[in-house]
Image (cartoon, rainbow, N blue to C red):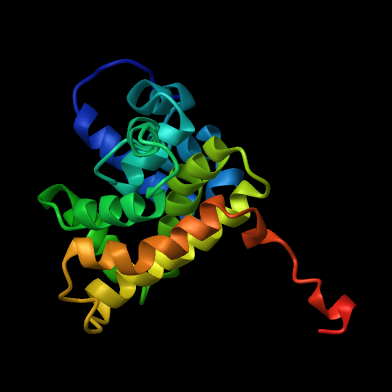
Length: 205
């Protein structure tokens, strides 16, 4: 059994754990993934996984290589209040993707087309780690559904802007794209009717 603690070759061990984690998360999803499962795939002691990454969430953030910590970024997005939250989210994602630190995430976005593993990692991170935190903080009904609806817009935006490069989305400024798409995200996140089933057929409409 591998021993915990710092040791020679620690960088290689960390990389091996991350490679195993990417495969494990893509195969079973975030919810079903476990520290033990990641450790088994990497052939290390589970304590060593925790030594490097502290938690399953920590492993996931490092495996996706997203350039920010949702636990820090999301409260900052929410702090100004509900007004304009949808537009702030669009700006935040676009500015993150287009920054030098966001280049690994753009690589993941471009891999989604040809790799179900990349698609699984993207869906899990954007929906659970980022948007579900936002929806829970708003204390509205069906936070996961709301997060999924917002995620569908943001992932679709990323595909059209960076992969398919559809105009005018591909070359529009961040501010303009936020103005176009922000109101839709705002509705998904804050409108009580956004997740309500359409019952108009019962009234003969």
